[in-house]
Length: 188
Image (cartoon, rainbow, N blue to C red; front, side, top):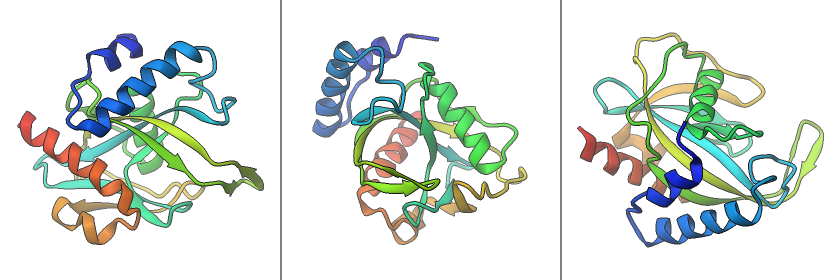
């Protein structure tokens, strides 16, 4: 595992937003190294997400997220784990039922600081906070068995990339997904 701080330092931002978020993440890593990987830090913490593509690279496997009522990439909290690629792959398997998922690249594909509104989860209130998001591009077979994870989502579906704008209700996430698609187009 390459140290996350080094990965973020070496990350090549694709836009001004990513450069500003990258610098903020580096500052937070320096200032809060002991709590930034856990939800004990209730203001901001690292999460990792996977943008899962099929073999043809024309569909993404998304989950219908119960909290946001929208189709979304997979992902979750680091919960103490500092290898965010491992977190992204674990969450992809847990949320979709995939047995095999692989990274297209082990490098971070997007950096974003994402606002989370206050909400209720498992009978408790979770205050508004920031997700320091490292996104990875993953690959899986479109014919592999998938299933719903009822505590997290109410649907799992392969969605054509061309249909993302009409399927995703979290419009603020569309620029993130577009960045990932553009990065993939440079890889293949």
